[in-house]
Amino acid sequence: MHKFIRTIGFSMYQKKQDMDKLLRRLAKEALTTGCLDEKDGSKLYELRAETAPGMGIVMVGRISERGTFTREYYFPYVQSSDVSSNAECSIQRHTERETYAGLLDEYRVGISLIFYIENSMEYRLRRQKQLPVLPKGACLTGLAVQGKILLPIQKTPKQAEDSRQEASKRGRLLEAAKHGDEDAIETLTIEDIDLYSMVSRRIAHEDIYSIIETCFMPCGVECDQYSVIGNITDMELAKNRLTGEEVYRLKLDCNDLTFTVAINKQDLLGEPQIGRRFKGQVWMQGTVQFEA
Image (tube, rainbow, N blue to C red; front, side):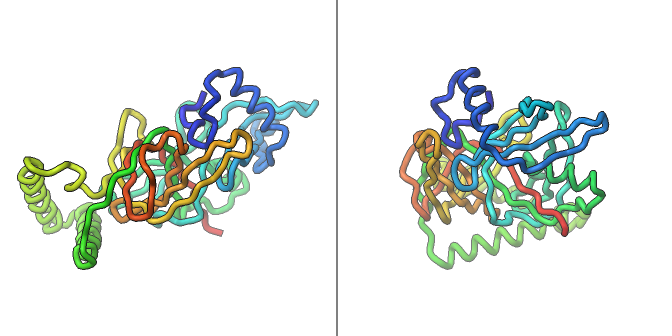
């Protein structure tokens, strides 16, 4: 059973047979959002069942001559209409099945950001029809099974603006360093040494979360899961139409990168408000936008 199914409001489904029963029910009422002709003459279908606005379950499988849907795999999804990144993006196939991951060279977070492409069927159909498959943007979302709310770091407007300028400057330096600029590499090295010195000095008498305002770093052994701390810039509460469970959709600003995180209300510790911070581990998904 998928670990993140509880994120979209199915926390009560703990047994595989109960989940199978739910998926059979959803398959009957889901919308067909893609049909791919395969080399062996069979057809692969993608069905989407929306359980709350902008979130639900994707099921991929085949439909028999009798009209029976045989599921091959499924996953929960959360969509966002906000473009998180326009950075260069490459698409790679997963080993186990023909699903895809996106890799963003995103300088703002300082790492190559890997995410699970939730519209991989669209990508496969575009390749089959020989349409352009060059990504021009990605709308990122994160699914969390637990998280907590942290108080914000108090800043004056000038301090906030200085932080934004520093983040922008560091992004430009990272981009220059990637292209071999020795001055940029030297500047970044000196800044890292100064940062380490500052943190070592402050950690002796301050809480770690008053020093680190936001963070975005890989977590665990799976390459598309991250530990994040981000400022909440917007939020809404959605309700699963089948279970009645409520799901928070939090828009986060993390290292100058904006994306949406979904988490079941009962899995979130604390009261979210705009201006506070969210801390948790997320499975990063994304909707890739292609050229027309």
